[in-house]
Length: 338
Image (cartoon, rainbow, N blue to C red):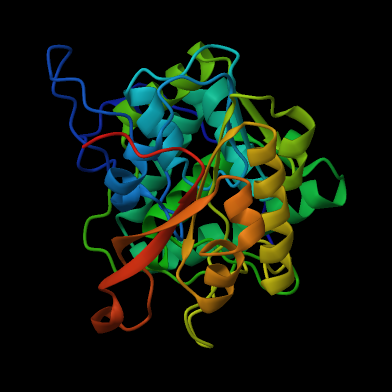
Protein backbone atom coordinates (compact mmCIF):
# COMPACT_ATOMS: atom_id res chain seq x y z
CA UNK A 1 0.00 0.00 0.00
CA UNK A 2 1.19 3.49 -0.82
CA UNK A 3 2.38 5.80 1.95
CA UNK A 4 0.55 9.05 2.53
CA UNK A 5 2.06 11.78 0.39
CA UNK A 6 3.47 14.86 2.12
CA UNK A 7 1.11 17.76 1.48
CA UNK A 8 1.99 21.40 1.57
CA UNK A 9 -0.11 24.50 1.11
CA UNK A 10 0.44 26.88 -1.75
CA UNK A 11 -1.07 29.83 -3.55
CA UNK A 12 -3.30 27.56 -5.59
CA UNK A 13 -4.72 25.70 -2.61
CA UNK A 14 -5.17 28.94 -0.63
CA UNK A 15 -7.11 30.52 -3.50
CA UNK A 16 -9.82 27.86 -3.46
CA UNK A 17 -13.16 28.99 -2.11
CA UNK A 18 -13.85 28.25 1.53
CA UNK A 19 -16.73 25.96 0.63
CA UNK A 20 -14.56 23.93 -1.73
CA UNK A 21 -12.07 23.41 1.08
CA UNK A 22 -14.77 22.30 3.50
CA UNK A 23 -14.00 25.34 5.69
CA UNK A 24 -16.12 27.98 7.40
CA UNK A 25 -15.79 31.28 5.53
CA UNK A 26 -13.55 33.94 7.07
CA UNK A 27 -15.78 36.77 8.25
CA UNK A 28 -12.98 39.23 8.92
CA UNK A 29 -11.04 40.48 11.89
CA UNK A 30 -14.01 42.43 13.26
CA UNK A 31 -16.26 39.37 13.60
CA UNK A 32 -17.39 38.61 17.19
CA UNK A 33 -14.95 36.30 18.96
CA UNK A 34 -16.71 32.99 19.46
CA UNK A 35 -15.88 30.69 22.40
CA UNK A 36 -13.25 28.07 21.71
CA UNK A 37 -14.77 24.72 20.86
CA UNK A 38 -13.43 21.20 20.30
CA UNK A 39 -11.80 20.63 16.93
CA UNK A 40 -12.62 16.91 17.11
CA UNK A 41 -15.93 15.13 17.58
CA UNK A 42 -15.56 12.43 20.22
CA UNK A 43 -17.64 9.63 21.70
CA UNK A 44 -19.00 11.01 24.96
CA UNK A 45 -17.91 14.58 24.21
CA UNK A 46 -19.15 16.93 26.91
CA UNK A 47 -20.29 20.09 25.08
CA UNK A 48 -23.94 19.35 25.74
CA UNK A 49 -23.24 18.68 29.44
CA UNK A 50 -21.34 21.93 30.07
CA UNK A 51 -24.31 23.78 31.63
CA UNK A 52 -24.52 21.06 34.29
CA UNK A 53 -20.75 20.98 34.84
CA UNK A 54 -20.09 24.74 35.11
CA UNK A 55 -21.74 25.18 38.54
CA UNK A 56 -19.11 22.75 39.88
CA UNK A 57 -16.07 24.57 38.48
CA UNK A 58 -14.12 25.81 41.52
CA UNK A 59 -13.87 29.59 41.80
CA UNK A 60 -10.10 29.36 42.30
CA UNK A 61 -7.72 26.52 41.63
CA UNK A 62 -4.08 25.77 40.89
CA UNK A 63 -3.29 23.51 37.95
CA UNK A 64 -6.05 22.12 35.74
CA UNK A 65 -5.77 18.38 34.92
CA UNK A 66 -7.87 16.54 32.33
CA UNK A 67 -6.69 12.88 32.31
CA UNK A 68 -9.30 11.55 29.84
CA UNK A 69 -8.75 14.28 27.27
CA UNK A 70 -10.87 13.20 24.30
CA UNK A 71 -12.22 16.31 22.58
CA UNK A 72 -11.32 18.46 25.60
CA UNK A 73 -14.71 20.19 25.88
CA UNK A 74 -14.17 21.25 29.51
CA UNK A 75 -10.65 22.50 28.74
CA UNK A 76 -12.02 24.64 25.90
CA UNK A 77 -14.82 25.92 28.12
CA UNK A 78 -12.42 26.92 30.90
CA UNK A 79 -10.08 28.55 28.36
CA UNK A 80 -12.97 30.55 26.88
CA UNK A 81 -13.93 31.68 30.38
CA UNK A 82 -10.39 32.89 31.04
CA UNK A 83 -10.10 30.52 34.01
CA UNK A 84 -6.75 28.93 33.08
CA UNK A 85 -3.23 30.19 33.76
CA UNK A 86 0.01 29.58 31.82
CA UNK A 87 2.00 26.53 32.84
CA UNK A 88 -0.99 25.33 34.87
CA UNK A 89 -2.70 23.04 32.34
CA UNK A 90 -2.08 19.31 32.00
CA UNK A 91 -4.00 17.34 29.35
CA UNK A 92 -3.43 13.59 29.08
CA UNK A 93 -4.86 10.46 27.49
CA UNK A 94 -3.83 6.93 26.52
CA UNK A 95 -4.89 7.31 22.89
CA UNK A 96 -1.63 7.93 21.01
CA UNK A 97 -3.39 9.25 17.90
CA UNK A 98 -5.31 11.76 19.97
CA UNK A 99 -2.27 13.07 21.85
CA UNK A 100 -0.18 13.14 18.68
CA UNK A 101 -2.88 15.14 16.88
CA UNK A 102 -3.25 17.68 19.71
CA UNK A 103 0.53 18.16 19.84
CA UNK A 104 0.92 18.60 16.10
CA UNK A 105 -1.86 21.18 15.99
CA UNK A 106 -0.32 23.04 18.93
CA UNK A 107 3.20 23.05 17.46
CA UNK A 108 2.64 23.04 13.66
CA UNK A 109 -0.76 24.58 12.89
CA UNK A 110 0.18 25.88 9.42
CA UNK A 111 1.21 22.45 8.17
CA UNK A 112 -1.80 20.65 9.67
CA UNK A 113 -4.23 23.19 8.21
CA UNK A 114 -2.62 23.20 4.76
CA UNK A 115 -2.77 19.41 4.59
CA UNK A 116 -6.37 19.41 5.80
CA UNK A 117 -7.36 21.92 3.10
CA UNK A 118 -5.91 19.60 0.47
CA UNK A 119 -7.72 16.55 1.85
CA UNK A 120 -11.01 18.47 1.82
CA UNK A 121 -10.48 19.55 -1.79
CA UNK A 122 -9.43 16.06 -2.95
CA UNK A 123 -12.59 14.59 -1.39
CA UNK A 124 -14.98 16.54 -3.61
CA UNK A 125 -14.63 14.34 -6.72
CA UNK A 126 -15.46 11.05 -4.97
CA UNK A 127 -16.20 11.39 -1.22
CA UNK A 128 -16.70 7.69 -0.44
CA UNK A 129 -13.69 6.41 -2.38
CA UNK A 130 -11.50 9.16 -0.95
CA UNK A 131 -12.50 8.37 2.65
CA UNK A 132 -11.47 4.73 2.34
CA UNK A 133 -8.30 5.61 0.44
CA UNK A 134 -7.26 7.95 3.26
CA UNK A 135 -8.22 5.43 5.94
CA UNK A 136 -6.82 2.23 4.44
CA UNK A 137 -4.01 3.30 2.10
CA UNK A 138 -2.54 6.24 4.00
CA UNK A 139 -3.66 6.56 7.62
CA UNK A 140 -3.45 2.98 8.88
CA UNK A 141 -0.14 2.15 7.13
CA UNK A 142 1.41 5.36 8.47
CA UNK A 143 0.19 4.52 11.97
CA UNK A 144 1.65 1.03 11.69
CA UNK A 145 5.06 2.45 10.81
CA UNK A 146 5.23 4.74 13.81
CA UNK A 147 3.83 2.05 16.11
CA UNK A 148 6.70 -0.23 15.12
CA UNK A 149 9.17 2.40 16.29
CA UNK A 150 7.56 2.99 19.70
CA UNK A 151 6.91 6.41 21.30
CA UNK A 152 3.66 6.70 19.35
CA UNK A 153 2.68 10.24 20.29
CA UNK A 154 6.28 11.46 19.94
CA UNK A 155 6.54 10.17 16.36
CA UNK A 156 3.18 11.49 15.14
CA UNK A 157 3.32 13.72 12.06
CA UNK A 158 1.39 16.66 10.66
CA UNK A 159 0.14 14.37 7.87
CA UNK A 160 -1.32 11.94 10.41
CA UNK A 161 -2.87 14.77 12.42
CA UNK A 162 -4.58 16.18 9.32
CA UNK A 163 -5.82 12.72 8.30
CA UNK A 164 -7.17 12.05 11.80
CA UNK A 165 -9.14 15.32 11.75
CA UNK A 166 -10.39 14.53 8.23
CA UNK A 167 -11.54 11.01 9.19
CA UNK A 168 -13.07 12.33 12.40
CA UNK A 169 -15.09 14.95 10.55
CA UNK A 170 -16.26 12.61 7.78
CA UNK A 171 -16.46 9.22 9.54
CA UNK A 172 -19.53 7.67 11.15
CA UNK A 173 -20.66 9.76 14.14
CA UNK A 174 -17.13 11.12 14.59
CA UNK A 175 -16.08 7.88 16.27
CA UNK A 176 -12.56 6.71 16.95
CA UNK A 177 -12.45 2.92 17.02
CA UNK A 178 -9.72 0.36 16.43
CA UNK A 179 -10.01 -3.38 15.87
CA UNK A 180 -8.05 -6.15 17.60
CA UNK A 181 -5.10 -5.49 15.26
CA UNK A 182 -5.09 -1.83 16.24
CA UNK A 183 -6.38 -0.65 12.84
CA UNK A 184 -8.75 2.31 12.66
CA UNK A 185 -11.94 0.80 11.20
CA UNK A 186 -14.69 3.42 11.47
CA UNK A 187 -16.86 3.46 8.32
CA UNK A 188 -17.62 6.59 6.36
CA UNK A 189 -20.42 8.79 7.65
CA UNK A 190 -23.17 10.03 5.38
CA UNK A 191 -22.71 13.79 5.57
CA UNK A 192 -23.67 16.06 2.68
CA UNK A 193 -21.40 18.96 3.55
CA UNK A 194 -19.22 18.23 6.59
CA UNK A 195 -17.13 21.02 8.05
CA UNK A 196 -13.71 19.49 7.52
CA UNK A 197 -11.39 22.43 8.09
CA UNK A 198 -12.58 25.14 10.47
CA UNK A 199 -9.35 27.10 10.06
CA UNK A 200 -10.19 29.87 12.50
CA UNK A 201 -11.00 27.47 15.34
CA UNK A 202 -7.93 25.34 14.59
CA UNK A 203 -5.65 28.37 14.74
CA UNK A 204 -7.26 29.66 17.92
CA UNK A 205 -6.87 26.22 19.49
CA UNK A 206 -3.17 26.19 18.63
CA UNK A 207 -2.76 29.73 19.98
CA UNK A 208 -4.52 28.87 23.24
CA UNK A 209 -2.46 25.73 23.83
CA UNK A 210 0.75 27.62 23.11
CA UNK A 211 -0.16 30.68 25.20
CA UNK A 212 -1.07 28.47 28.15
CA UNK A 213 2.09 26.38 27.64
CA UNK A 214 -0.21 23.39 28.11
CA UNK A 215 1.34 20.00 28.77
CA UNK A 216 -0.21 17.49 26.35
CA UNK A 217 1.05 14.06 27.28
CA UNK A 218 0.50 10.35 26.75
CA UNK A 219 -0.24 9.01 30.24
CA UNK A 220 -2.78 6.83 32.07
CA UNK A 221 -5.30 8.60 34.24
CA UNK A 222 -3.70 7.19 37.42
CA UNK A 223 -0.63 9.32 36.71
CA UNK A 224 -2.58 12.35 37.92
CA UNK A 225 -1.82 11.10 41.44
CA UNK A 226 1.87 11.79 40.79
CA UNK A 227 1.37 15.46 39.96
CA UNK A 228 -1.91 16.77 41.41
CA UNK A 229 -1.55 19.02 44.45
CA UNK A 230 -4.06 20.39 46.96
CA UNK A 231 -6.48 22.88 45.37
CA UNK A 232 -5.75 21.65 41.83
CA UNK A 233 -8.82 21.03 39.64
CA UNK A 234 -9.15 17.53 38.16
CA UNK A 235 -11.89 16.75 35.64
CA UNK A 236 -12.33 13.07 34.76
CA UNK A 237 -14.48 11.87 31.85
CA UNK A 238 -13.87 8.12 31.57
CA UNK A 239 -15.56 5.75 29.13
CA UNK A 240 -19.04 5.46 30.58
CA UNK A 241 -20.34 2.33 32.26
CA UNK A 242 -23.00 0.91 29.91
CA UNK A 243 -26.66 1.29 30.81
CA UNK A 244 -27.39 -1.98 29.00
CA UNK A 245 -25.50 -4.96 27.61
CA UNK A 246 -25.65 -3.45 24.12
CA UNK A 247 -24.74 0.12 25.02
CA UNK A 248 -21.05 -0.31 25.77
CA UNK A 249 -18.52 1.70 23.79
CA UNK A 250 -15.11 1.28 25.39
CA UNK A 251 -12.85 0.40 22.45
CA UNK A 252 -11.41 3.78 21.63
CA UNK A 253 -8.13 2.20 22.66
CA UNK A 254 -7.37 -1.54 22.44
CA UNK A 255 -7.76 -1.80 26.24
CA UNK A 256 -11.25 -2.08 27.70
CA UNK A 257 -12.58 0.09 30.51
CA UNK A 258 -14.61 -2.47 32.42
CA UNK A 259 -16.18 -2.68 35.89
CA UNK A 260 -12.79 -3.31 37.53
CA UNK A 261 -11.42 -0.20 35.84
CA UNK A 262 -14.38 1.81 37.16
CA UNK A 263 -13.61 0.60 40.69
CA UNK A 264 -9.94 1.55 40.33
CA UNK A 265 -11.00 4.97 39.08
CA UNK A 266 -13.18 5.43 42.18
CA UNK A 267 -10.12 4.79 44.34
CA UNK A 268 -8.24 7.52 42.46
CA UNK A 269 -11.15 9.95 42.83
CA UNK A 270 -11.29 9.33 46.59
CA UNK A 271 -7.53 9.79 46.97
CA UNK A 272 -7.68 13.08 45.06
CA UNK A 273 -10.56 14.31 47.20
CA UNK A 274 -8.69 13.41 50.41
CA UNK A 275 -5.73 15.35 49.03
CA UNK A 276 -8.04 18.40 48.87
CA UNK A 277 -8.08 18.55 45.09
CA UNK A 278 -11.23 19.85 43.43
CA UNK A 279 -12.60 16.79 41.62
CA UNK A 280 -15.40 16.56 39.04
CA UNK A 281 -16.27 13.28 37.34
CA UNK A 282 -18.96 12.53 34.75
CA UNK A 283 -20.40 9.07 34.16
CA UNK A 284 -23.57 7.19 33.39
CA UNK A 285 -26.22 6.31 35.96
CA UNK A 286 -25.53 2.60 35.57
CA UNK A 287 -26.07 0.59 38.80
CA UNK A 288 -22.33 -0.09 39.16
CA UNK A 289 -21.61 3.66 39.16
CA UNK A 290 -24.41 4.34 41.64
CA UNK A 291 -22.88 1.73 43.95
CA UNK A 292 -19.48 3.42 43.75
CA UNK A 293 -20.57 7.01 44.36
CA UNK A 294 -24.28 7.54 45.14
CA UNK A 295 -24.57 6.80 48.84
CA UNK A 296 -21.24 4.94 48.97
CA UNK A 297 -19.94 5.55 52.52
CA UNK A 298 -16.25 5.83 51.61
CA UNK A 299 -16.99 8.33 48.84
CA UNK A 300 -19.32 10.28 51.15
CA UNK A 301 -16.67 10.49 53.87
CA UNK A 302 -14.28 11.95 51.28
CA UNK A 303 -16.82 14.71 50.57
CA UNK A 304 -17.98 13.30 47.23
CA UNK A 305 -21.59 13.67 46.11
CA UNK A 306 -23.36 12.34 43.03
CA UNK A 307 -25.88 14.54 41.18
CA UNK A 308 -28.18 13.31 38.40
CA UNK A 309 -28.44 15.75 35.52
CA UNK A 310 -30.33 15.64 32.20
CA UNK A 311 -28.31 14.79 29.10
CA UNK A 312 -28.76 13.42 25.62
CA UNK A 313 -27.58 10.07 24.31
CA UNK A 314 -25.59 11.06 21.22
CA UNK A 315 -24.25 7.71 19.96
CA UNK A 316 -26.52 4.91 18.85
CA UNK A 317 -26.74 3.12 15.51
CA UNK A 318 -30.50 3.69 15.71
CA UNK A 319 -31.12 7.46 15.62
CA UNK A 320 -34.52 6.98 17.26
CA UNK A 321 -32.77 5.72 20.40
CA UNK A 322 -30.72 8.89 20.79
CA UNK A 323 -32.52 11.15 23.20
CA UNK A 324 -32.90 12.42 26.77
CA UNK A 325 -31.30 10.41 29.56
CA UNK A 326 -29.77 11.15 32.97
CA UNK A 327 -26.07 11.17 33.77
CA UNK A 328 -24.05 11.62 36.93
CA UNK A 329 -21.94 14.62 37.82
CA UNK A 330 -19.85 13.35 40.73
CA UNK A 331 -17.85 15.91 42.69
CA UNK A 332 -16.54 17.29 45.95
CA UNK A 333 -17.05 20.87 44.69
CA UNK A 334 -20.05 22.58 46.27
CA UNK A 335 -22.43 23.79 43.60
CA UNK A 336 -22.31 27.54 43.12
CA UNK A 337 -25.57 29.41 43.82
CA UNK A 338 -27.73 29.67 40.71
